[in-house]
Length: 583
Ligand SMILES: *[C@@H]1O[C@H](CO)[C@@H](O)[C@H](O)[C@H]1NC(C)=O
Ligand SMILES: *[C@@H]1O[C@H](CO)[C@@H](O)[C@H](O)[C@H]1NC(C)=O
Ligand SMILES: *[C@@H]1O[C@H](CO)[C@@H](O)[C@H](O)[C@H]1NC(C)=O
Ligand SMILES: *[C@@H]1O[C@H](CO)[C@@H](O)[C@H](O)[C@H]1NC(C)=O
Image (cartoon, rainbow, N blue to C red; front, side, top):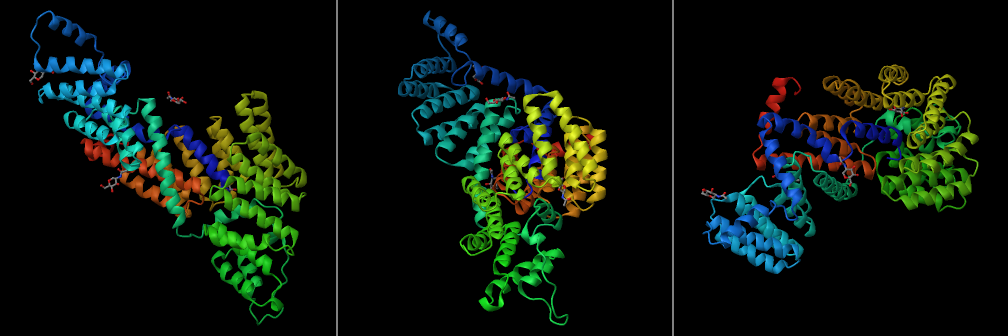
């Protein structure tokens, strides 16, 4: 994430505007629409009515007044039917429950279940559900699960029973089952209950995190696209690997070896030739090697970009541990190890490495700029601004640092709701374009601010200019696709643009993730799952991987649950096709 924080952070921020922050909400929108459509609204009314009732009582059953009235009349000598008798036991149970006497409550619910004719299924479901509530208070989790399951055999669309069973599954760390049940709850409640949605969101993040941890351990390294590597390299102004003058090969007939060969591959953007050439340098004998530390820095950088973090860290460690190495090289080893630490979610270590780099090279603009990017990523906006300002003081012509500073000011102006400052920032960005007319970042940043301000036409013009300068930059296309959705709600055009982005850069994580989210909205859950899996493969940082897994898991859970609940996804998709909003 630290590598391409600009694009990732901004696009997620835009996607959030479009979909709504909690993961489950975005994924639920279509379901809400479609279930209304399939059931002609009747389903909705029924379910909603149930939710309201549940909200008025502590344990998810209807208010007891009616039953109490009936019970009174029973005391006056009327003969109760079995189901009424069962309900009066339930009411006794509810009283005990309210007074914290859970064991006694259970005994009454036992009697209610005993008495209740099995054909009165709705009542039976409530009795089991209430008994489960008591067991939950006593933390008897397997009993809770058993009773919820019995409840659901009588009423398979009883949201409250799913929700309670979800909590029992969480208590026993059966997170997949928990996810399934909370997803069922959200679907049955038509994604209208904030409490369930927030719970689903938390479970998705947690299960996403577990999957991501495993993935990071056995991930397959991927050399990223040239455009991605360029974006990363352009964020440095004084990286010795990019500024150094390497003498050309002395004899034309002997091909360059070791670091010289690696460096010319680096210049020519032949990124997969770099690592072996660096290794050649690093493994050569002391006497014939002049560029050992440079080779370590370059190899570590490429490993970092490919996500081979162990190897990357070893190379940076070797430089940092070598007190004789040049201070500039050591400072950059710290800076790059800091990004690495961010990728694997070690924030404290990352910040400590920035400190160390600053000690070595207090006048280096990259130290402050790189740190500013990380701080912005961590939402430490004011400290980030301070760091951007230091970077620009040291390197006044650092266009990327400059527009990022403007963007940070924009964020601050938004937070403080300060219109004047907002206008000032927009003017600054416009001036930046005049000052740096070839800087892609200037145009794309201004475009994003314009889109954010609903000034879509102008945003499109800036994107067009950015595309002229960087026609192979897939990330620019992703941004435009998201804007198209915000602007016109034009799903087909957004999908076209996203597919173009994938064609341009088949490793563009953002494009897969965004397309996956759009496919979820169109009820193409299976395709969405495949797209999220691609996103996972090409994600660089732990946080990105967590996010993609959360989305994937949400989609899988919805596939499973709709199947179990008997909601026909094919019918839904077919309807989509008929109404022209589908595939
Ligand atoms: C219980 O079931 C019986 C038989 O199906 C039915 O006649 C009766 O109305 C039901 N009672 C309630 C309260 O649902
Ligand atoms: C849902 O609840 C959360 C946390 O209590 C709150 O921040 C959020 O604004 C609520 N959202 C809605 C749609 O009510
Ligand atoms: C690619 O586009 C993104 C914005 O979407 C921008 O931040 C980045 O600097 C661009 N990279 C290159 C190499 O043009
Ligand atoms: C969904 O169903 C598949 C196949 O039955 C299963 O392997 C998977 O664990 C389920 N996932 C969830 C989140 O329910």
